[in-house]
Image (cartoon, rainbow, N blue to C red; front, side, top):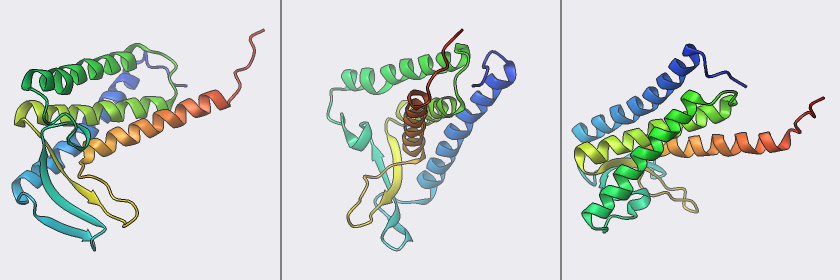
Length: 170
């Protein structure tokens, strides 16, 4: 368990969030400036490619055809509220385990990266694609990777929390 009441703990959380958002934004900046739309750059043969696309929806372009006010509500305002609450939760809640803290921080950092794109550019820049014949992804970015990693860490944290018996109080 980690006490989050201490200023150092809060600073570390903010640094982790900023690191996630910064890495995401830096890679998207490089892609926006140096790669043409639909240009495919093989990194590992045809299994890992860089392919620049703009996504005006959410995960795998879901919600792309929604009316503008509904899209703004569900893809900008609601995520802003959820990310704000998650940050508040991390700043005030004490005795959270490290996996949970890192997981939530990754989700906030990735969420902020994609939210920034949506608010500033009107779409999210995606550029990573994996194709291992039996397993293929849609096109995604580092923010999506951060959100996925954060979710995995939270699930692991919750699993171990339930798997470890809590000692009875005397």
